[in-house]
Image 1 (cartoon, one colour):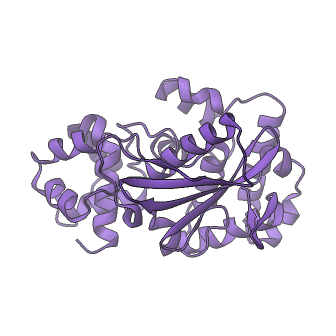
Image 2: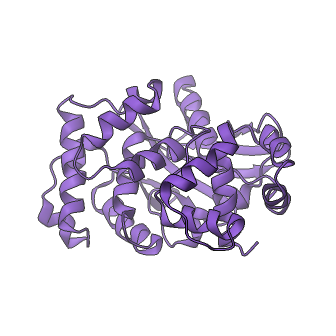
Amino acid sequence: MPKTIAAADRLLSFPLTLRRYQVYGEDAANYFDGKLFRKVFTLADKHFLLSLREANGGVAFNVQPATRSQAVWQTAEHIARQILGLDFPLAAFYQFAQRDPILRDLTQKFHGFRPTLATTPFESIVTSITAQQINLQFAFKVRSRLVRRYGKRIVVDGQVYFAFPTPEQLARVKVSSLRQLQFTEKKSEYIIALAKTILAGELDLHALAHQPDAEITEQLTALRGIGRWTVDWFLARHLGRGHAFPAGDLGVRKAVQHFYFNGKEKREDELRAFARRWGEFANLATHYLLTGVALGA
């Protein structure tokens, strides 16, 4: 029996929030057809399909195969909140945006838009590694190949769905195998090394959620292939830290420069200093600026 969940402040545009799962091509771990969102998740070595759709007064979510397990339903609700960005303080951000004509205009045009969050830290980091220095369309294509090749598959109502691969699954993969999927040699090495580091107990990605930014940065940048850019997106799109600002991202730089500097190029340190004005709303401001550029605001 589906259950309903809603943002505490009742601000949610379902299609705007989930559009990123459509516009860059297939995302084999996050299915969205414009009305229904589906994702495979795992609990106690069992796989379930979470489905989300708009419903009166909120979002209806369901789990298949059917289960009465409270733990499964609680996990499903937690994942739903991450996917829909329901814990972002959107109402407070909208009040803050009234001081800034650009943000005020964007919040009016994209009312109810919320940044989505990666539901596991491993998926978040692998996603970022995949997207390093390539366009998002190709990144989505290559990552979907990875998911289809190594992710656990389940069948629901005759349709095959894939879970994002786990560290255990990718630690056994050879670089040559990822190269066949069109990962570069270095990215293949980075992903496999990350998986092996986690499997060896040398890195607890879930524990990072309880650590300050500086400690997270220190631990992650000690790994091959993970720099400030990847850490910033980890803070923004997995942990949902309000002050996260990926100033090293080309798209972010262009968005800020477009809206605030008439397209004039600025250094990364200048943009970081500029973003301090947004404080705990920097993450939300960043995503609204990116959406504004993407949708021609």
